[in-house]
Amino acid sequence: MKSQYFQDFDEFANSVRDVDSTMMLQNPVRLIWSMNHVYLPEIHMQLGQLGSGNIVEGQSWSNGYVLYLPLTATCEYSANGKVVDKDSFLILEPGCDFCISTKTEHDWCSIFVPTHNLARGSELVESSSGWEKMTCRVTRPNLQLVDQFQSLVDMVMTAATNYCEFESSPAARGVEAELLKVASLILGQRQGGKPHPERRPRLSREEIIRRSKELLEERDGKPVLVGELAARVEVSERTLRTAFNEYFGVGPARYLQLRQLHQVHRVLRAAEPGAVSVSDILFQHGVWQLSRFGSQYRRLFGELPSETLRTKRGSSLR
Image 1 (cartoon, rainbow, N blue to C red):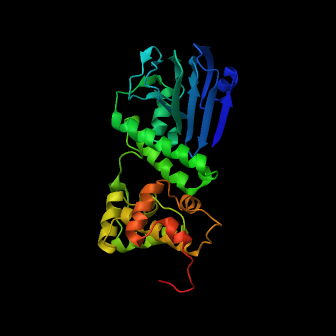
Image 2: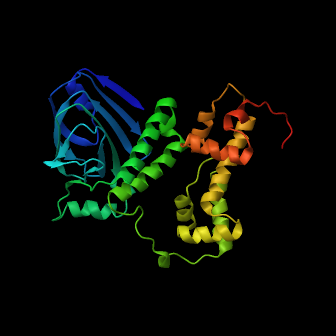
């Protein structure tokens, strides 16, 4: 994560990414501004903290969406003259003109999502070059989506602060997948579009399991998502779930969870205490919800990951 602190407003303005814009300062309270950037594999995240109000005018990039969330309840945010209500998102569609205005000190966060990562992304980009103009729009208030989005942002910021290699770790892909799901809901569309099972070849359960095992063997020690597995096998997630329940007695999500738990357990048992931290190992195995994973780990193995790491093992296996 790249964190910057500024005492010069113009330098702060130049640090803002994902849009072409100019910014004007108004009503300064504290002459300090800060910016945090996190670069996930496909998503860029920004967290801005301003000791002033400001007016920012510009145009969003043509190859993606900016989802902007106000974070200061005592500040009024407006976009193109429309108030951004509490628990609402501001959406900058690809290539739209915008003006965001605030009068007092405030915080905000945003993510930039390339159109190719969202359902019907190519159609949306094509429409912007025709008669339909892309817009700067405000969503209806939705506390549940705001809480989900802000929780994910907090997790990313915490992980990136505490683990310098987080952005390039497998855990970054896991949290990015969750962000894409929430982004698709915010935009009012389903990620990946509607499935078309009739276009897929009908596969036997044995073939589905065989293809699944091939991918899991290739990705030994690395995380695999259910959607990724279904795409590789070329079946819908529903068909994959049926095959796994019949063959393994559990669905693919539970199977992949157990696989991940056991992989981490083996690595922790083999690691030298003091040479590596638990968080290092978890992030490298795609784990980004550390406390939740710790609870699942204890239920399965009867101890926390930190206890496994601290315990010196002999050469014998359990």
